[in-house]
Image (cartoon, rainbow, N blue to C red):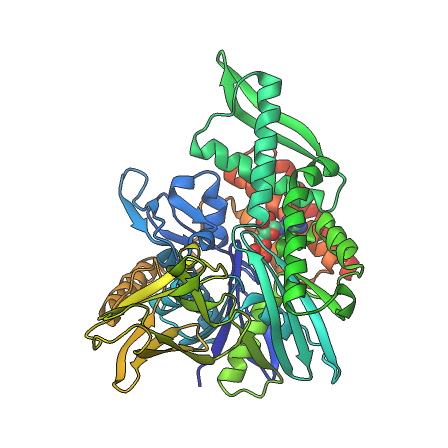
Length: 589
Ligand code: AMP
């Protein structure tokens, strides 16, 4: 029987995991790396690259590469990529779910290669705060990738599932998830094998990318102060500087200072200008503190929604790459007056939890039961009695946020005016009392209502929210039977017929077949010694203790940045990685 996989489709990185003998494990790619950067590109030959290969060319070829697509999921944002060979101007325009489909297809390939079997079903995680449109886009991406998406689950819930120190006592856990592009905080209650989300809050436009951007602006300012000219605003230079900013950020997680040297960043009077400076951790912390303060407010809101105080929490779990930043740990600890739990793998626990849920759904013997909640209230626009008479435009909640899914609820509404012949059902999600301030999900009209006085015709509106986040709205006019049904499949996301999905699948398949891409494309034009070094490093990574692994990751980041920018520092970084591996292997005996 083929396996159902769990997928963490992250802004920056993605992972795929399975359950074997009741235990979840993350599947490595051909390079041995458990983490696959969520990056897609086309190389100079027009060949599809996914994962680390794509990320490696990002700084040098931003017009051929896309990353952090998750931030755009559920919108019509278009990414234009150069897809042809170096001589060609060929481009192709992608919607966010199409890029995500490529990433998911590569993860499917990775799982199939690792397992030697086909993989057709998956559980995929999304931030708890993702809107309906974003969830639908994620599901659609899965389908285009050839995966039946059994369930979309919330990332913090998955993280809590993976956290295995279960006791029979009820534990209240706060999951603080700060990734590359999104932030979530959830309060979760774990009793034995049952995990229940009590409340979730967050911001799906806040994450490590924002820290990079702030640092980037800081670097650009320093450059202008030093040289009296601005950093050139071409995409390649900006990509280099963003990449440098991320490296500095990561280095500052372990060191008090980070030095940066980006050669030939600009020129003045035909003289090349370099960016060379040292950034102190405290400078970086000043840049990001206001953003982190917002995350503390979200913690307070989630706790208030769950009706808990900080001292009621038994544990705090930090998830997401950005929680490696010491200031994040410090601010969360000070705010909640309790240190976060050690020993949780912030990068992998979401995928592990998704795999556990996949195991449960496919009938494996797994000790975990998931109870998830809806992140936003769902309801319709109604007219309401006000001091100025009956006014339209109010939001009437049918399913309140934080209800456990699946959930069905009904409300009965009456006509607002005399001889009203139609009723407009406008569906929204959100928390604002004014309907228009919330996110519209869809609408339809009930017609041919018998002309009667206001209030005498009653319509029941039934909301059915299923496990995969699909909302079905049914209306029934009292005494007349069912009037209409609407399956809400995401505002802002184009609907696709099954024929269109099959077409998109076939197109994606051919892209993969012709390139045999997966995340293991043909050998790039890299020096064999360098290729060997990279392979050894990625194989060593999973065998190291956290601190050492982090150090090696930092070095690898620098190495890849040096490769991408063809920096003169390459030889030196190469030697550092080589030395590191030598000492690591002697230390391990
Ligand atoms: P995730 O979406 O959970 O994969 O997190 C990715 C984000 O974490 C990116 O913005 C990374 O730059 C950031 N990140 C990864 N490692 C570190 C680190 N050691 N220090 C600071 N940020 C990091």
